[in-house]
Length: 112
Length: 115
Image (tube, rainbow over all chains, first blue to last red; front, side, top):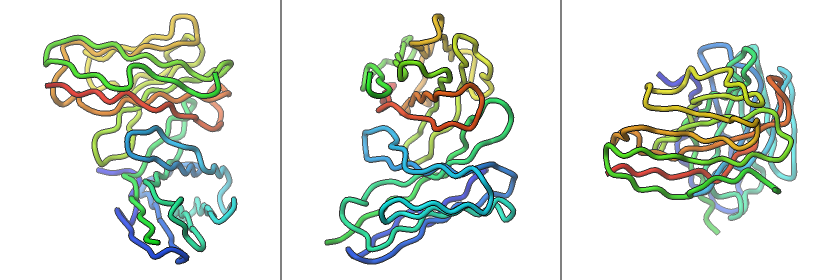
């Protein structure tokens, strides 16, 4: 079973529209890590949140973490074609290792 | 180097062959992780090194998988007697800290195809 459920699996939006990607967990995970991946490439780090209730923004991307509810999200404002790709949420499994648990990814396409 | 590098980028192996995948982490990074990413899935943890010590290998799927980091820098993931289910992208990540919550930076991955 998937420890970190990510939705939607895929998303097509018109350029300029806003969108939100969500990740939820049925077990306790820690922090929030957002990565972007293009086909055939590695993961590009976007943002990390460590504290429950924290919110962080960079350019037009905002990440939110609600650790009590185990809800995590990524919001993109006024999407652009450059935002297209696969977005992966990650969370810390806990313990000393700092290994990350990932969602299954959201494929985002932005139509000009 | 500027980022995490991995080689080869692509590897095709016949079932039963042994393969070795290399990871060069960011210079000075203490922690090194290996993940396996199946098609259409998120990465799954395989193993973790802090310097040369392999502190967690709980994600290795079988005893055919072996990883090492003898000098605390470059790491090699070896898969013996490859099977078709081993086909995946193998990602390496490194982070500055040891065990703490620091950002993991990923390499481009090695896409392994087992025929």
